[in-house]
Structure formats: C-alpha cells, structure tokens
Image (cartoon, rainbow, N blue to C red):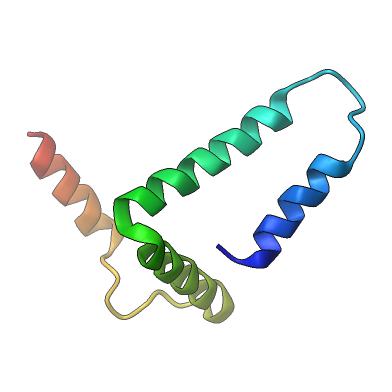
Length: 82
C-alpha cells in the first residue's frame, strides 16, 4: 500500500465529525476489508503488483499487455457457473 493512501485515511479520521452518521466509517471499513482480502489472496507482493499495474494503467490510459478482455472474463465466469 502506498504511503499516500495511508496518509489520506489518517487525515480523514482527524477531522471532527459533523454528524453522528456512520456511513463514512462503514465505507472506510469496507475499503480496508477489500485491501485485507486482496492481500491475503495474493500476498503483500501481489497486492503491491496490483497497485503498480493500476497506477500504470491510470497513468498511460492503456491496459497491460497481459490483460484479459472483459468479454473473456465474463465467458470464463459463465462457464465456471454452469
């Protein structure tokens, strides 16, 4: 995980709450739950690779060369579910 994402999360917790609405807390916990699941599924190095690939895709606007087209992913899912 990048230090920037950690820092932004810490900063958001330092702001005093304006309401008793827990929606933001639930959103933050759900986000961390996803990070935890991805890290457990692929290990810390795998998660770092995912972040690096995502950053590269966002920076260049192109999918990595070894990416699978969404149509193929959907077909694989449908096949597995049938």
